Structure formats: structure tokens, C-alpha cells
Amino acid sequence: MYKHILLATDLTDDTGYILKKVRKLRDYTGAKLSLIHVVEPMPGYSYAYLGIEDIEGQLIEESRAALAKVGESLEVDKKHQWIEVGPTKSKIHAVAQEIGADLIICGSHGRHGLSLLLGSTANAILHGANCDVLVVRLPEEK
Image (cartoon, rainbow, N blue to C red; front, side, top):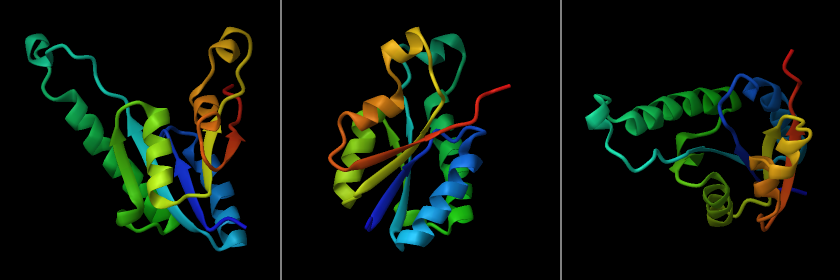
């Protein structure tokens, strides 16, 4: 059974839905749990020119605070919480490998048509992972 689960979260409103499932799976398996959120890098032009100061830094700090709340909810120590900056897929794969995760859990909205053809973050994680991936289908927006 799984020994180390990595929950990859986008920290959106749907996070609570996934947390219930993650909590039950962790309880069932007795696995260690780590958390990751990836901040996509901002484009390479100067925000100072636009009068905007360090948006990426603010995003990282907000993400760190939000992930800490998730960690508190799941009783995951801060040393097992990862905020990474870069391409989502490769950062998740790298952390999963680094910590020895044997299961990555992420959420996905059901996509149809063009969105399905273009792929999704969950699809990208699935097709490059060296371990199992559980994709939780998130409730449809109404």
C-alpha cells in the first residue's frame, strides 16, 4: 500500500472537496502526507514599468499562507509543505521523486471538447510521473 502521498493542490475553492478524500485515504493507508503548490512564473518583463511591485513574491507569500492552512487542516508539518515556482508538471514530478512519493493526488474538472484535446495539468502530471497518480474529479461548477 502507499507509504508517501503527495497532494498537488491549486489552492482553489475546490480544495476542501479533495481534502476529505485525501484524509480518508491517508487514514486507510497510514501513509505520510506531503503537500505541494506550484506558482507559475510571471512573464519576463518588468512590473516596475507598470507600477506593480513584486507580484510574483506576493503570490508566493499568499500561496505559502494558504498551503499552511491546508497543512494545518490535514496535520501536515511545514517541513512537508512545498511551494515551488516554475512549470507545474516538472516541479510536481521533481518533488515527488525527491521525497519518494509513491502516489500523487490532484484534482481535475471534467473537460470536454477543445479543453480535453489540449490537455490539463492533471493529464500532464499523469503522463510524466514515476509513481501512481490519483486524479479526483472535482464537482462541476453551477
